[in-house]
Image (cartoon, each protein chain N blue to C red):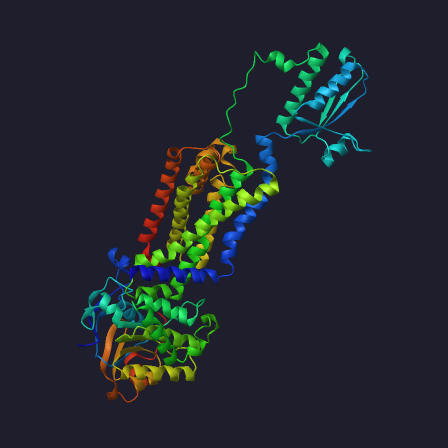
Length: 373
Length: 246
C-alpha cells in the first residue's frame, strides 16, 4: 500500500509537470541552447589556448637575393604562420581592421647585409603572447638565414628539450560546456520544484494530503523523485547532444574518457545534490515568487563561482579557492575527472563525498524547516 | 459512541512568544464539543473565532495542543480516525491542472481505497455532485460552483463517517448551493455525521440539529438548534455587532 501511494504521488507530480507548458521546455531546451551557443562562441578561445591558432600574415619581399627568398620561404613554412595575400587597395590599417591579417612582414632588399632591417607590423589588438612568438620566430629564422644555418632548432636540440605533460587542467569547449551547462540545468530545477511545492502549500492541496493516512516523508518523496528523474534525463540528453551533435557543428570531437562508466555514480550524486538544493529552497521560501528568485539567483551565482561560466583553470588564484564553496564546482570537477583526466574512481570519490554531504545537509535543513508543511 | 469528542482543547499559534516570556494568544481555549453519530452540527463564530483552527486540529494538520480529540473513539491522528474523516477545507484544495477523475484517483489512493473501489466511488461521488459529464475535463475549466462540488466530492470519496465542512457553499450560485445541501442531506440520512462551519445562518438553521458558537477561541453557546428562533439575531446578540478585523 505504501508503494502504491508513492507511485500515485509520483504519477500525480509527473502529470502536473507535463501539463505545465513552460517548465518542461525550459528544463530541456535551455541547457541545449546554452551548450550550443556557448560552445560556438568560445571555441576560438579554447582553440587558441589548447591547440594554438595560426597567425595570418602578409609577407612581402622587395629583395631578389637567394637569402631573401629563403627567408620568405622559411617564414611561410612555419606551423604558426598562415600566409595570406594583401587584397587590392588594402593598406596595413585596413588589413588589420578587416581581420584579413594579424601582421605584415616586409623583407627589404639587402637585409642580409644590414642595409635595411626586416620590418614587422602587428595588429595592435593581437594577443601579446602571439606577438612575442612571431617576433621570436622571425628573429631565429632571420638569424639562421643570415648565418647560413639550415635548421637552427636541430642545432640547439641537444641543449633544450621539452617535457610538457598532457593537458589535464584546461578542458576543451565541449568538455567545459556539456557537463557545465548540464549541471546548471540540473540545479536550475530548483525553480520549478520549489514553486511547485509552495503552490501546493498555498493551494491547500499539500495540507489536504496530510489529512489522509499517509506519512509526510512519503509525500515529500513523491514530490522529489520525479524531479530527480528529470535531472537524470536532462544529463543523458545533454550528453547525447555533446557526443553526437555538437562535434558536427564545431568540428571538435567529444570523448567520454577512459572510464565512462564513472559517469553513472557521478550523475546519481549530482542529481541528489541538485534535488537537495531545490527542496531547501522550497523550505526556506515563503512564496512561489520568493522561491523563484532565490533558486534562480542561487543557481546563477553558483555557476559563476563554480567554474561553469569561466573555466576554473583560467581563474585567478583567489577565485579558484572561492570556487570551492559552490557545489557546482565539485560537480564540474567530478565530470572533468571523467572526461578530461581519465581519473581513477578514487580520485572522483572525494568530490562525490562533498556533494553527498551537501545533499544531506539540504535535506536535513528542509526537514527541520517544517513550517512550509 | 459520539462521532467526535473534543475535550478541553487549548491551542496557541505563537508558542515562540510564549517561550520568550511574552503573553500568549490562544486560538482555542478550553474548547469542548461533542458531535453525535449521525448528527449535523453547526459550528459558528465570527471571523478569527477559531473555527478553521479547530478543523485543522481535528484533521491532524496542527499539533502541539492540550486536550483530547477522538473520532469514533480513536485518537484523531490515528490511522483509523483519519480514514473516518472526510474534510472539505474552505480554500478549494484540488489539483487544477488535473481532471476531476484524476483528482479523485489521487485522494482515493491516499485514503487507502483499492483500484476497484476508487473507480466505483469516483463514479458515485461524481454522480452525487452532478460532475459526471465533466469528469474528464481539467479543473481549470470549472466554474466556482463546480469547484466547490468537486471539493466536496473529494471529501466524500472514501465514504467517511464524519464529514467536516468549512464554508462549503461560499461564493457559489444558488443552484450549486442547493445541490450541495441535497447531497449533504442524503449523506446524513445514510448515517454520516457532519460538522458544518458556515457564516450563512439560514443554511445552518435549516440543516443542523445542534449548534456550537465560539468567539475568541472559547465556547459561548452550545445547544439544540430548534430552541433558537432566529439564528442570525441570536448570533449577533452573543457576539456583538462590531467588526472583527483584529
